[in-house]
Length: 398
Image (cartoon, rainbow, N blue to C red):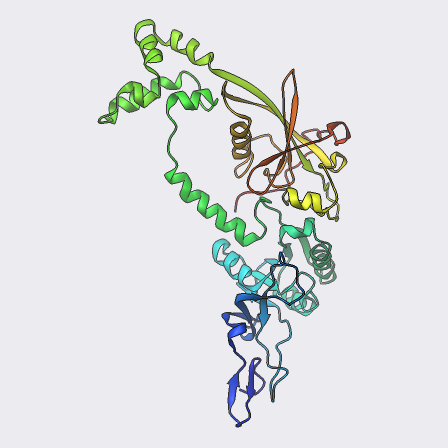
């Protein structure tokens, strides 16, 4: 066991491994491009916190399995982790060994992982090997922290310089910013696919009032009800109509029902503002974070000069819909699979939504799970780009 990180010789001259209760957890191997294990991290069962740490500090979640301070013990250092095909034309770079393993399994792509955002020194010799193996493109897939954390941003920048020094191209991968890491995003995509299969179908009336179908869709709904023989469900229930609406439909026809339903519809106009990075390598401390991060950055309201108008649209909805319901619908429409013609990114924490009509304007900051009313000065926000200039840089698919 001599020379194997984590092992050492005890007082009785026996080889043993440096494990104890405080560092119990899951072992995650760091594998080299040759397939050999170079070291192992421990994902701790209980994060380690120092006595002087503030209560809200998360604590250390990962440590290296090391025995450098014991007899005949050694440390692994901080080796780079590789998983996939070492001769791939395209290689993805991320932070975190387990994250790379999960992303590789979900995406069937080759991944390199560093153990920390600034732990990029050992990438240089690996990039030299990859370039010789035929790799042409490095995809930088660092966490969304690169938009709000200087350390993560600097680490990502070094990846570009290293790739270029070895004659390889390097491009960023950005995704739905509601998910911090590439593994979180990929897992969420799978979860959404499963949920979509189980998602209940709205009745005709609800779909029509929310502008999700035309009135003529009623004919298709009636045909489904007839052909599938919905046992125990009357046509009135299946369409979601009240007794008054159903009676009007039976006695006076589709025109009368359409008039009744149209009277229950409203149209709410809205705008979406998002932080504008515009290709710059810079960080904004509250980017993609909740309202607490905005306040911690010493802002009482979102600084409009950091934002750009990304969308101006309208939402058809029932006339008695609350603003919470309307905001939830907007979030649902503009997160995940994005509407055609929309060139912003998915709605995420730090975005601002404006609801307006002839009488008033209201502004809402997207928090972690919901929307919070805020003040906002749209006059200082950057105007919406011309469509031909606004190229989609954010993706929400595989």
